Image (cartoon, rainbow, N blue to C red; front, side):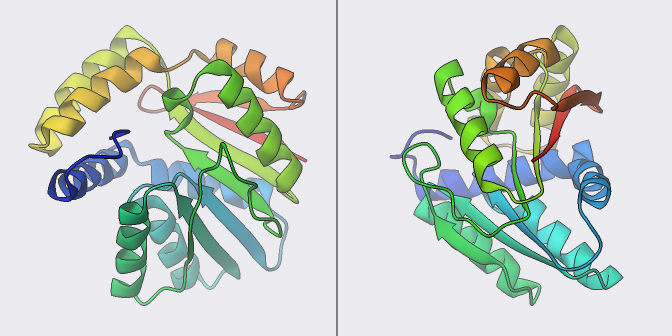
Amino acid sequence: MDDPEIDQHEHARALRGLARLNRLSMIERTVWNTLGRITRPGPVRVLDLAAGSGDLVVALAAKARKQGFPMRFAASDISAFACDQIRRRAEARGLEIGVVCLDVLAEEIPRGYDVVMCHLFLHHLDEPDIVSLLEKMRNTAKTAVCITDLVRSRTGYLLASVASRVVTRSAVVHTDALLSVRAAMTPGELAGLASRAGMTDARIRRVWPERMLLTCRV
């Protein structure tokens, strides 16, 4: 998935597979409930970094519209192909979601958002880049930062191995799922990096299935 030369057909298949894994993990419910706790009443702007196919941010925007909540969503990804997939998903459901191609490590994060979030992205980075990204998110968000990622554990590895083969035929996902768990952190390791990034009051808790959620008010 990190290969910029990946075939577009395989990329699309992998993104669909990852979207199915996200639905299976119920990440939408976890993030939605978290946004309700960390945001204030009234209009809220949310930016999702490294959003992939945009399945999560589109689902959240659809839920906000259905429930009549004044929330506006935007998404970014380094891949132009992924950004196009986000636009297509949003248009198919009649949603207005701002999309920008962005290298979050090399470029500035757009300002003006109450919540800046990213999901299942940190395990792709080394420690200095994680600290740098957390600092940028903390300095950019107006209200809070919200992050989810995998937990490195034997249980997580087993779940990734089984679930990835149940939900998709994508060989890219089969490989990426296991590599991702191996590259992931423990909650304690993430807490240490968050502290280095100035998130001294970050809260980290484990959520099903073998994932962790970091929230930090700014």
